[in-house]
Image (cartoon, rainbow, N blue to C red; front, top):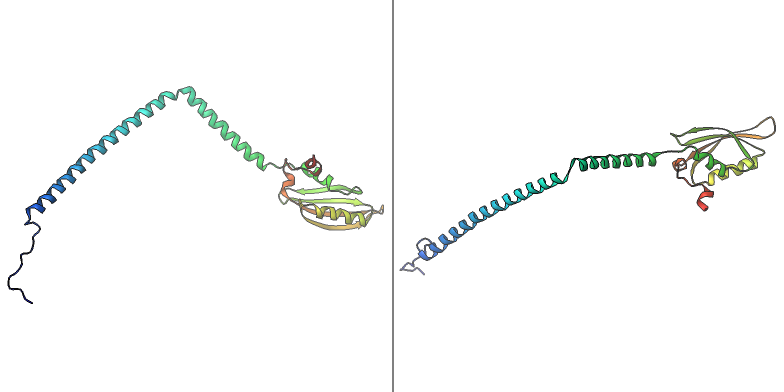
Length: 188
């Protein structure tokens, strides 16, 4: 149904009570913002002053003698770090002789060898009395975990009636480490 008498609509700005509330709210927020600005500015200046005081105190504590000592300590720690890297990567080919001695049959003689440290390969030229002992020697090498590959390259009978042979061994790199324990040393 159509109304004949129109109702009055409330106008936001026409109401002075509501206008006053919004005005005071805006003024309050503005005052809080201005006060916050000055408070934060004051705190930043205090922090800067405190930081400069701490820096000054630190400079007073760092005498020339202490600076020299600190530099020496840093140099020594660098040298220790470098030495530990060197010692970790150091190889000792002499460990190989102990290793081969422990893994050689009592009736086998090696009279020549070729060693390639880059490829971790050892070629042994040896002599034994018969093929049975040669087979036992090959089995000894194959059963050793530090040997990654065993290859009997050549076998022949020499003039004295013995068996000469050439065996190629790929050896795990730990054998060349100075701390590598041989079987006898690890049991002690």
